[in-house]
Length: 40
Image 1 (cartoon, one colour):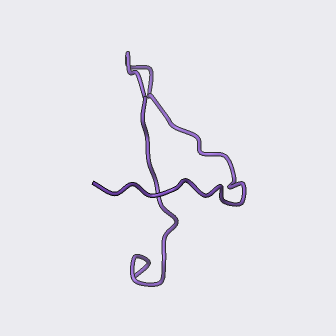
Image 2 (cartoon, helix red, strand yellow):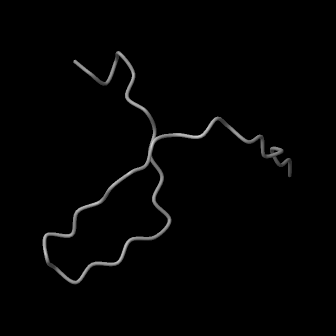
């Protein structure tokens, strides 16, 4: 089994999540920046 060494990346802007007043718990959220392919 091979593992990939972690390499730090440049800081990103903050991510804000909305809960709309519901009882919600967020954890382990991953996101990726949109690219030209994603934008249309």
